[in-house]
Length: 268
Image (cartoon, helix red, strand yellow):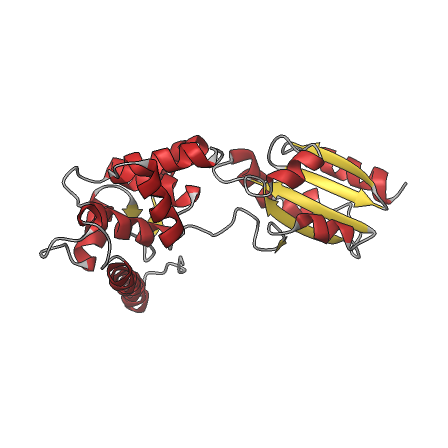
């Protein structure tokens, strides 16, 4: 979403267009959310004078959630720190605790009502973490419906997966990705993981010892938990290298360890 910077007036106009596009996208999100929530209970219904999309966008900037400078819109480092805390707190909880947290976050009367909300609007643990992070930065008087829309705006700026764009994302079924091949490599990533981000910058070096014909994919380790448990991945970043049923698992951001395991398995 970030555009190249320059000193020209054309670039400044382009920057304004970028931010305006974000506002338009936010407006569309808000209208869709309002339609979906039209039948919800009073706790989640917008008041008649509910804030307009541009004002919500500005509120996110004022609250330190979004940075709309330099011709791009991004979440701030401060917000991402808060987001990471909530993410780590809730992404791995069981269903019962998740529903209790949803009930508390939205002021619902009981877990059964929370279950209805989760099922009706496909609320995920990631959604909850993002909502709580936005709420912690926003003023106390922002209505829940506006908080929900603000959360959707922020969600548009957050990648759907921590897997690097250069790799095939096989989070949905890494077991089949491995089973269908004689040789395969599955890399494991996590959100809000500094070693993961560092390794992404040197991904080519980390995968240098893997032969070109070997398929390489990536997974979100917080989602593909069964695969990680099967192959003994207990931290991110990690890599699982498989050859004819034999495998090597390496965790941590030491690219030399990844390279050594790849050479041992694929060249041995």
